[in-house]
Image (cartoon, rainbow, N blue to C red; front, side, top):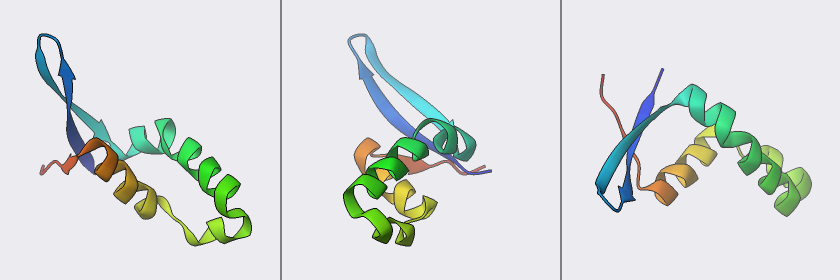
Length: 67
């Protein structure tokens, strides 16, 4: 299983959040996938989890965690 971390700023400092690939599949991918279908219709089938992951990493400035 792959993991990624990102920094979440708080008033008392910065927390580092680590999420698993399973967390991303469950919590983020379905909404992203729906938006791709809404935006691109039939062409959305060209997009996969790795495309989502690239978007998610860019938005959260996430980095892979080495195990």
